[in-house]
Image 1: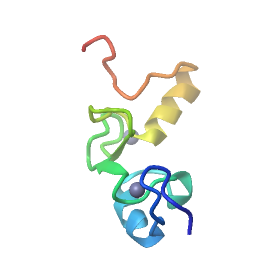
Image 2: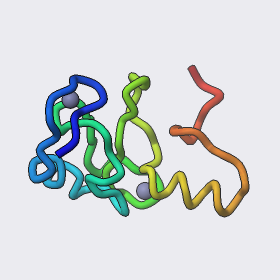
Image 3: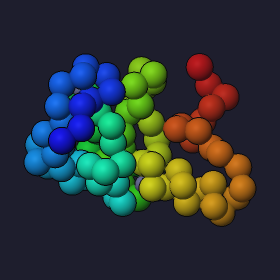
Image 4: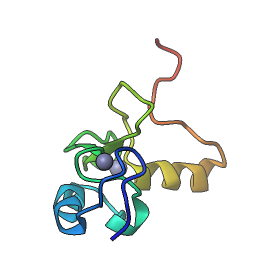
Amino acid sequence: MKPCQRCQSLIDEYILDKQLEVLRDLTVDDFNVCADCATIVADACVECGGGVYVPQNESDVPDYCPACRSDLIARTGRDPGWTCDTAST
Ligand SMILES: [Zn+2]
Ligand SMILES: [Zn+2]
């Protein structure tokens, strides 16, 4: 077990894995935070309709899941950020 980078408690990978089920491609190995500190919103990705991961420094729910963001970077060579409309505030 490794400690959560945010709250320093040990990460329970079973609980975190359950929480990550709605996310494409990501597993507990991709996360350094515990289930309490990882914010997952189901069905929020505008690309695939899957769950998205809300980064710790973001207050808004992202439009892209991490997998779709990676796809977009691979396709366009540009990082779209977490939202599809970065122009709006
Ligand atoms: Zn934590
Ligand atoms: Zn997606």
